Amino acid sequence: MTLNDALKEYCLRIADNSSILAHRLSEWSGHGPILEEDIAMSNMALDLIGQARGFYSYAATLEGKGRTEDDLAFRRDTREFVSRNLVEQPDNKDFGTAMLRSFLYSCLSYLQFRALMNSKDETISGLSAKAIKEVTYHVRHCGDWVVRLGDGTEESHRRISNSVEDLWMYTSELFEQNEVDALLVKEGVAVDLNTLKQDWLNLVDEIFAQAKLTKPAEGGYQSSGGINGMHTEHLGYILAEMQFLPRAYPDAIW
Amino acid sequence: MHFVNRNLANPKQTSNIGMETTLSVEELNKREAEFDAKIAGGKTIEPKDWMPERYRKQLLRMMSQHAHSEVVGMLPEGNWITRAPSLARKAVLLAKVQDEAGHGLYIYSAAETLGMDRSEMIDQLLSGKAKYSSIFNYPTLSWADIGAIGWLVDGAAIVNQTVLAKCSYGPYSRAMLRICKEENFHNKQGYQIMAYLMRGTKEQRDMAQDAMNRFWWPALMMFGPSDTNSPNSADLMKWKVKLNSNDDLRQRFIDRTVPQAEAIGLRIPDDKLKWNESTRHYEFGEINWAEFNQVISGNGPCNKLRMKQRTDAHNNGAWVREAAAAYSAKKAASKK
Ligand SMILES: [Fe+2]
Ligand SMILES: [Fe+2]
Ligand SMILES: [Fe+2]
Image (cartoon, rainbow over the protein chains, first blue to last red):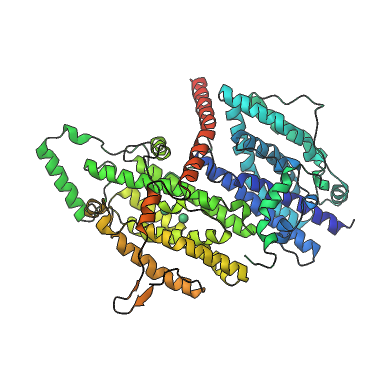
């Protein structure tokens, strides 16, 4: 694998995570628990689409085959997507699940972008410097909601506890790496996710403590393989919906 | 809480509700005369000012209806966010629908100055007591409908709201001024979607024309019944809550929209449409008022769906709102 190929793959990963999570958040448009949260969720989705566009465009440039950001988002199939399985998980319009999913993911992407601001690749460091401000807000906003729901009513505590049970099995996968990372870390372009694990746990523990939530016991099933294109059944449906128009009208320009 | 605060009016500043019960007839007449003079002199009425009870009620009805329309209006367009055909279009549509939520917020808080909480207004919407614009009871069946809505529906809203920006109630007029800027962006993005479709493949052009055929007449209905059949018009005109007749505004919309349609090759689905050189206006065919009356009385294609979507969102969010309230109560108690 060349450095260029590895870098392209790395960008696709970030872009796929962002676009899939944005898709999940945007499903809430018009359906939020309160107008202010409708606006906040759209804000986060917009930030993520912006990040996806930046990283897809860079991936397309690195690839050098004339593909565009939209080709990468709309013309790749499930097994080619290299997003983490956490972001594709449905929330079934449970607001707590949506906030927790974004919180768990954003804690990692916050730490990752913070490190990538020092990447030796200028485009990566530039895109990360822009994203860090957005993601800082996502961590805070979603973390605040995890706390409110965890320490709100009996019902909200029960519900957000269930969300923790449902989503926890997608957390260790957030740190999976492969030869792409090995190559890029050596070159000072990417960050070794193992070095972020403790910081991520600290962020999560702090919020869970305030929220009076406990982490599930270790040893349960943990999902694996998103970065190698191994996904849950949900991604196929997301792509079927998201990619419908470009696929149905392959010659059209929108 | 980290709610995005887009409140325009100060919610604590509410109007003098029910003051007239303590006033003598003489005093009441005097105040009404002052009120009428203020309006005739082109001054705005502010929340703290005395106002006739009927003025307050009419405005509250109009403003809450408008706020509900912004919020219900998120649904037909929201229907296509996850299917938008490019990342750029997706971002624009998401931002557009988000703006509508913001408009809902501005107008709810402006309406709150007339003495009713947002939650009470929302209850009236969900119970069916309050209405919203009939246009949102039509389905969005293709991507072109998103173009048609931005261009035609927001275009019609701009015509209405530009006039409302000059209305006599200060908080409403200021809310409209602010909103109109965003509506222009909405209108442009819709027109741009249509323009792209019209220079695209045959399938895309058909899609655009089909959307035009379905949304043209409902867009004209947005201005309300002809003035001879509009029950509230006379009072609203006198109080400068309304400054033009429904028919005038409809004509203004048609006159500015027909050339835009022609410019991109869209046909207006009206055989009677023609330019009248002597009036300098387009003549147009008969609007199907029977359909309009059906839709506003609850029998449109999507009335049930829209109310269900709003009700579900409200009910699904109840536990979240309760939790937030319980949490802040706990925090407040622990600070004591
Ligand atoms: Fe609006
Ligand atoms: Fe509006
Ligand atoms: Fe609009």
